[in-house]
Image (cartoon, rainbow, N blue to C red; front, side, top):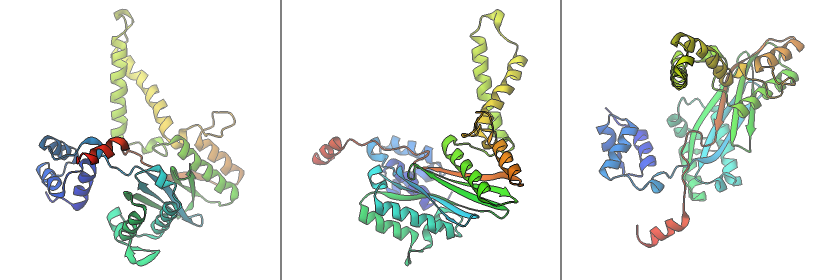
Length: 316
């Protein structure tokens, strides 16, 4: 199996091992990153954990938009939150968002290879290298996504100065200030409650089966802990699971979530949009959303600077 430079880079960032050691481990494990990490650890090629996890997990998520139908969101990472609050870093992240708004790239590799809009003599990747030279900290452009609407509008929302950034696309046959405000309110909902899907129909069967398996195991364990004369038959347990699953899925589906501004504390997001649509003679529905949270899914490094200085002094 051919091992890509991106795979080698990822393994190096996780372990701190050399290029050849990483490539050899990946070749041995047919490109499996987790298994390659174990190979390196067993071989003694991986560095100590605190040194190995030098991951840029701080940073910012920003959006850029054109009109009401086009928007892009990006995540640019730094090693420290101090750098993330730096005006130079903020300005650069906004430029990356503007670049993403106009890109035709389908993946990060192609995006980094594009000409940098702010200075076409450089690529996006080279612009990042220049900033690293100025800031003297590990930085990375982690991800981007662009959304364009052909039958409605897009709304954006940035929370916490760039900790969370959201794009929501809605289909609507009427566009006015009330509709725009409603879709932006839904973007705020996405930022606050982090749904995983728009509606229940979007949940893959594999996810449904997995969640059912987990809840079933929990229910069986709870049932077996009861006195024998109070235990329920298997078929009753499985019927009870339907209610639990529906409740869980409502919490992760945007349309079914309770709208955060609901006056009665019960109105769902779908009901809120239907209400706004009716008042404006419109049919409004959410098509998709994108939610980026800084450092999401990444391990943040923990540093003890006193220990680091002592280690360097000892030549370690």
